[in-house]
Length: 299
Image (cartoon, rainbow, N blue to C red; front, side, top):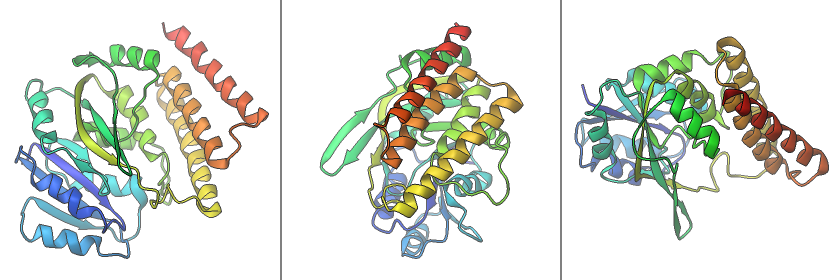
């Protein structure tokens, strides 16, 4: 059994996947497994992955029977992971070579740790900036973490940029009232983030930039065709409805839900190009007031 499993959901990323895999196999911490989930793209991504797998037995490739999209493709990778902790890497991104080593140091100090957050670099053309959670580097109880989160409003809800206890991830996924035929590629991370935060007990914030996020304008969510925009908006509406159902079923933190909905609404109106309309401004303002009201009740 390895200590950390790195999950790479793979769909049409032949331009980047070698860089992602190099960043995995060259980790300074070697006790890892690398799971590539073939989500049935039509380029040479998996052929490249197979070449790497032939040279490194830590690499496993699983093949989906159909295209499952990001949310479910990641889940398929987690199900076969043999490590107690998992880390997600989108194949157009890459890890710092000490990412697993730095996280393993923290994991080894507390066997009951549920989540580790760490900072990332954001790459856009030739620029490289830092994206930080801006929390003090220490252990947090769920209560203290939520209190800080609601105060800073810095959600950092991506599923990457974290190490997650495998059993916690599977428990969180089971809390999503997801119909079998629903496949989600937009705002899918927050569907796991919301229950994950609510069912975690111990969280550590690591103030190190260990992940490199590549802004990719040719990705599914980056291509701005009218069809993609409408599809992304519909998927985002589905995500909001699922979040409401999770809250209704399990009575999770309502202030956090309204903060998530506030940011999702801004994103939705930005996608539609209507962010500056009076109607949209009013809705965004109303969501902000709802968040402040429920945060006040929690204080």
